[in-house]
Length: 263
Ligand code: WAQ
Ligand code: MG
Ligand code: MG
Ligand code: MG
Image (tube, rainbow, N blue to C red; front, side, top):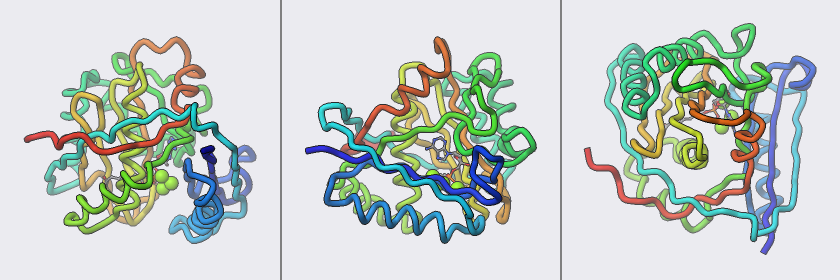
């Protein structure tokens, strides 16, 4: 069976490459029977995003041979309890240190996402790539960043995961999508850890992820209403950022979750 990679990116005030503001993105990897519904779902996501009405939407569909698809088990999920954004940031730095990121790099990453990581303080379409030891930014285009594509849940694994998570109640889709992305990013050879929080004004949560600590949810990382957020991929020993990005664009399906990490 073949798969289809479906990618969507939407911007306001022109296309991304013409300086438009990023509104929404999405990347899926689905079988033929899901293709049309997936395109429709991503288009609807672009047109109904809380950041505003886009005037540019790019939808790309590409066939992917099933022999090229790698399967990865989802990272185990845990959650930190925090009472404020400040505690959330402290928890994020703590988890990043635990995962092997230098303190100065972890603090710099948090500060960048707080102020807006794009050159003039807005959001990026992709992620910052940061040297885990020096905190240097390595992505070649700091407005675009590095984009992870060609990933999805294997449909039965997603159904099972949702069932197990249903007692948590909220945000299944968003968490499932983030968990898939974090699983792929942290599986890449040179990734030390990832830090993320949403740029959606209504969603204030995020996570730190690494192979060693799993996917650690942090429920408060910004104030409600803020349109700022982003992702930082901490790396060590990459040869160049193009090769690293290529690894993040090889097709991956997420399969059953490994055991929960005990606290
Ligand atoms: N590749 C690289 N960076 C991306 C990608 C991608 N495919 N998709 C999004 N980003 C970056 C981009 O800079 C966005 O501005 C930023 O991440 C945030 O994206 O367990 O919803 O889609 O409750 O707004 C975390 C869930 C949700 C936490 C994160 O991010 C939880 C979220 P959003
Ligand atoms: Mg998005
Ligand atoms: Mg997203
Ligand atoms: Mg968003």
